[in-house]
Amino acid sequence: MNEYKIIQGDCLEVMRGMEANSVDIVITDPPYGINENYKKNLSREKLAKPKDYGQYNWDTIRVSKEYISEIMRVSKQQVIFGGNYYADMLPPSSSWIVWDKDNGDNDFADCELAWTSHKKAVRKIRWKWSGFLKEKPEERVHPTQKPIGVMNWIIVNYTKEGDTILDPFCGSGSTGVAALQMGRNFIGIELNSDYVELSRKRIGHSMPLFSKNT
Image (cartoon, rainbow, N blue to C red; front, side):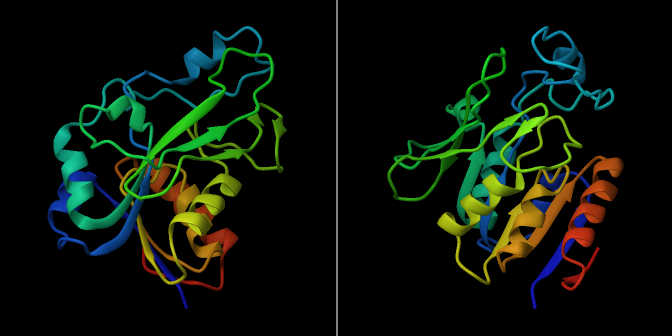
C-alpha cells in the first residue's frame, strides 16, 4: 500500500534534515521569479473571466542555488519544471520535457519546459490547459497548478512503481495525487498553510484508500 506525507515548512530546512539519495526522484515546480500572480491573469484581455487565486508574493524571486543543491543531494533523479529559468544552476541535459499546452489564441506561453536528470531524448506531451478549455475536466485551484494528466504521464515515463517521489514545492498537491494514482509513494513540502490544507484534501479525496501520514 502506497503512502503519502505532507510537511509544512521551508523545504530547504526540511531537506537539510534528509539523508543523501533518500528519495528516488524529485518532481517539482519551483518559483520562477516571474511574478505569475492573479493580477497578471486579470490583465490578459483575451482570457475570459480569469480566476482570482488570491494575493501572494512567492513568485517574485527564484529560489537560491542552495535549494537546487539540496534537491540534487536528497534525490537520485530529478524533474524540474521551469528549468529554463534555472539554466545557470542546472547541468546540461539531453532529456527535457516539453508540455504543449495547446492554448489557442491568448498571450499565455504555448509550452512549459521541464529539465530532467535522465539520459533520454527530449519528449513532448500535448495537454490542453487554457481557461475552461481543458483536455479533461479538472478544477483549477492554484495559479501554477499542473494537470493531473501531465503529472501522470511524467510519473509513468520517468519513475517506476513503488518509487518515492518528493515535491519540495507541493502547492496544490497535483504531483501527490498523480503519484498515488500511479502506485508511487509521495512526500510533499509546502510553506503556505492554506496550500498544505488544500493539497491534503485533494490527495485524500482522490485516493481515500491509501495510507497517509500528515
